[in-house]
Length: 244
Image 1 (cartoon, rainbow, N blue to C red):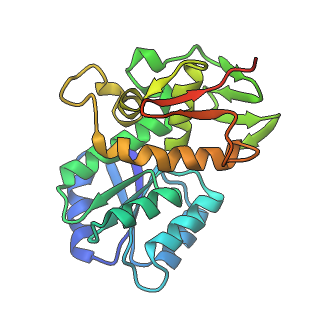
Image 2: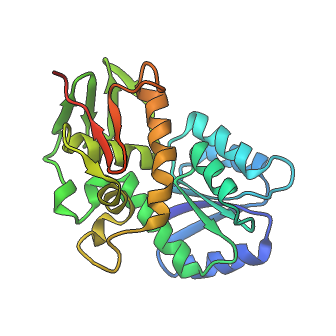
């Protein structure tokens, strides 16, 4: 059973999602404003947060920032504003996905399952991403404990969102090798469907990769403007550098 916190002042939408998602093993806890959402999240455990942008009082962007400052729970933002700028802002401040309104509840369910697959990489059916229990990946100053989903740099733990973690894991498993944008978008978006031509590549994820890589560099690089770990191969993709 998936526990979802819905922060949205649209009661009709809340009833619709509660009914639909409830039939697909997702239980909804609904609150109508950001302040209440933060209080509930501080006292209860959830698998995912469904967060509207246009909320009374504290808007969804600020709520997202506050959640991300102290929680790594996956966040799917919902908005009636479909501007690319809003989508980019949401991703920059820590959202894992962004769904414009109106949307089909079935699509939202698919997005929720996708972000949870990324947040729980050990549960994916994609054999290329499976590691032995407790196996660790070490690349220079970086250490990834995949079973515990813990990333350390120089011995200090680094807090990543599920999307950031997923990107880093793909790059780390192929350290020293250039991973194309298309390959990376495929791996982080729909790992369970990676072999399907229909779902193998999602251009919308490709467009957001730069945002997530930039955030990774802010957390991992000494100087994000002159990255030494995650390098861009112009026109191709990214590479996680191995130490010489």
